[in-house]
Image (cartoon, rainbow, N blue to C red; front, side, top):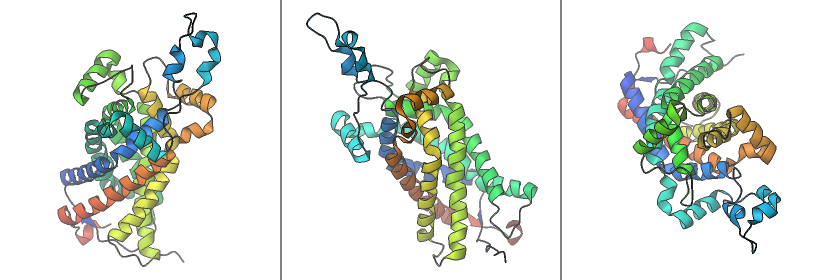
Length: 333
């Protein structure tokens, strides 16, 4: 009764070509959707600090109102409301270019990160298939998950400093009194000088967890959904198929990765010594702001991940048609 999933027309290329096409497709998607990512970061860190003005309100006696009424610390400054409101507020107060703060680091991250997690996925999947020996007529879910976890974890281990710099740039506002960086190169140097190598790898553990999970949700989900749509629907193997599979993969990635993503963003952006580790960051955030804090920025995260996946997968599939060549029949197994 088991249905055999039909063999797709496999395309192959050298490893450098796979890395280049995957990284380039991801950079194109990142450039187009970057403002959504900036809005997501701002919403995720909102609630960390009380309103700056509340702490410095003078009284007639010269004593700050903060000392007279300590409960004012409990009032959180809500500056951003919703995806459109956040983008509008940032543009009005800080200018449109602020939405692209950290773009350079973001593109560096995608060229390092996505080239590995996506470019090596098929090769790693083939390697695991030769070891695990799952039913070749089925979807080989476990094999694909192992490949997704491996390439996702490996990619973020190498590209993590670019993620730290990107988050710092996106979190910084015009009125920030904390760290300000003039360029990505200066940011790398400053973080390394002031916080050491550990600063550049701050939040590596949650980021590895997040990206291993999101890699499975994005790449494996896309891979499986694409096969299922080919098997059970009449959608042809063209842009319509790629779009449909990418939307489902983007939604799955948002749902499973949002909690880890919020904690990662908070911890990466925190001043040195604010948290002893990512676990303490998550516990404090949960106690102070409640469970829904772990899904802060969900709407922009969803909008960004879905649009990013749609653009990236369609672009990557078109690159493959141009840059890759059909595999020999013996290589399809």
